[in-house]
Image (cartoon, rainbow, N blue to C red; front, top):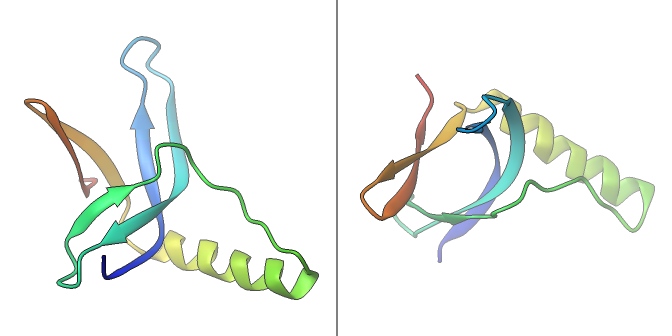
Length: 83
């Protein structure tokens, strides 16, 4: 894999209609194509205040990028930009 970053993923529960925006780790190929992402959202974490502050900076950067959502096609699920 090439790299990863934090991204906001929009989710809507099909049964309840509950909507949420969550931050996930998204993994890309060397060419920048999304390969995978964490199943569950992630929380900021740091062993020191300085590390936590840096982690929060990455979360804020995720808010500046386009929001993604999961799209199911056949048996495959992929991430696409939310319209």
